[in-house]
Amino acid sequence: MAKVKANAKLLENTRLVTDNTRGHSVICDLPVASGGTNSGPTPLELALMALAGCGVIIYADVCKNSKIEPGNIEIAVEAEKSPNSPTLTGVTMKVNISSKARKALVEAAWRRTEAGCPVLFVYKESIPVKVEVEVKTAE
Image: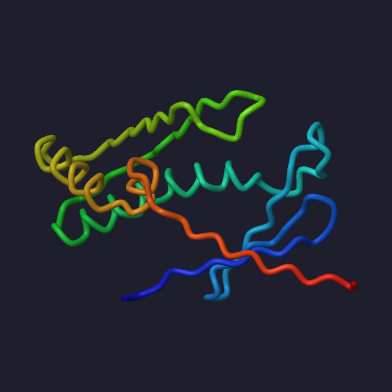
């Protein structure tokens, strides 16, 4: 089975770099009000950005493979989160598509997008996460 990989490393304070092991990286940080330097999105914001981006790229790929003109697609993702909790209580994905293709074709392409978007699947399904911690100290 193929593996998708990511790494993250603390740079300073709350600023980190995360990469996909294929040569692409993103700087993440907390906002100034939370003690960071606001030099990048928070990891949670990056997760929401990934959801929006996944919808756009999978839709474009579905359209390309189906020989449908994709037109323009924009996706906005909003999440509800209590300030004192790490848990999201709701996510809304607003999809806006403008295309010259027939409406039924575009709607079918979007249904295939939803069925094939791995990031959307992460949000909709409970996926087990195994956490392995190794601690090295100077003691």
